Structures are given as C-alpha cells and as structure tokens.
Image (cartoon, rainbow, N blue to C red; front, top):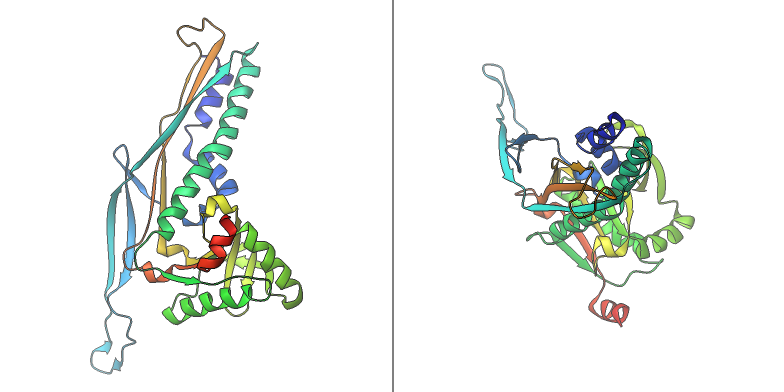
Length: 289
C-alpha cells in the first residue's frame, strides 16, 4: 500500500485523533471517561467513593476521625457493536486517494457515527430508573424558573460542580430570548479548567450549556441537568481497515471499514443526580399534531 494511503488509514486507527473528532463534534463528549482496555470490547475504569460524608471531630489522643476512601476498578462490557462499510471510487494517484479516504472517513464519523452514539447516550441518560422528572409548558417567561428549579434540586443533593445543561434547540431559543433581559447566560471557565471558555447558565451555581438538536436529545425532552461524574460514556474504536481492491469491481472501487464499540450508563447511586424536564402532556400532544 502506498505510504500516503497507509498514513490516512493509520489516522482512523489512532484513538487520540478519533477522540479529537468526538471532542469537537459530540454533544456528549464531557461524559467520556478515561479507561483501560480489557479484551476486545471490555473497559476497566476507576470509581472513588467516601466511606462517610459526616465531618469528624478532632481528638488530642487519636487525632482526626478517619474516613475511608473506597477505590475500586470496575469492568464493563460494551454492548453496542456498530459500524459501516464505505465504498470509495478509485482515484487517480495515491495522494488523491489518501485525501479521499481522510475526507470521506471524517465526514462519516461526524455525520453518521457521532450522532448515532449521542442519541444512544441520551436514551441511556433519560431512561435510568430513579432520575428526577419535571414537566410543564415552557415559554420565554418560564424557562429560567424551570432550569433554576433543577439547579436548586441538584444543589440540595450536594451536586454543585461539573454541571451540564443539555437543552433542545427549540427550547434554547426561549432561553436565549429570556437571557437578553436577565443576563442569565455568560461565558467562562468550567470543570476546573481555566483554559476553556464555554457558555454558562446560572448565577452562584453554573451549568455548561450544550444546545442539542431536538431529534438527538430525544422526543419529548426539553432539557437535562446533571453532573459529569453521574454518567459514564465509553468508546473503543475497532481496527478500521482499508481495501484497495474489491472483488467484482476490478480496480475501480476501494473500501473503508469503520467500526466502534460503545456504551453508556448512569453510575450506580447517581440516578437522583439526573434532572429531566419534559413538556406537559397537553403540550407534548399539541407539538406532535
């Protein structure tokens, strides 16, 4: 295989490069957790919890009250095994062929793979048993109060950092309209990373705002408030292959196979830290008519 073509194919087997595409184009990139690969479609990742959340006393003889730090490694099998075959016309010259591989492959990941993965992740996020669901009709006059209720709910649970607000595009318009007079939307750092500058909602408690197309966030979902530690998303990029000849097509067609193992779930015990807002029954009915 020509060197430039081999370079293009290696790009789609480079996890770091593929992660960059997901970070740039996925609406759920903030949920992706670092992990250690175990086997073909199994990941192992670190969970940390405190043995007690009660503030201890100091004793002159024994010192401070001990609180255990529970660290465990959890193994999970990824249930989603997805991918496609891309047929490419044979180009004149290896440079043109390598460019075609890179262009078509990236376009497929951006427009097919990532949206599909995002839809699945939101389905898992809203489908968890035990999450908090609120309903009501949203307008420019009521949307901020609805979001504030969610932030207050999470605050009372002690969930106050790394908050995300995934909001449907149709409802984001209402929020932007309301924020023109209230100033509730700002920009700034988030998640302890001072190098980032993202859109934020809120005053004392702020959430990163991610506007999501309605069809990707899910039917009947206005917005979702949660914290990134509450939801775990993983992806393992399968060995992607390129074939410069396809039987039956002579030398006129080539093939690029792109696959991915992925999965996502609400972490055990974190279900209450997911706040979902849906339209009222009457509003949902009128929107689908």
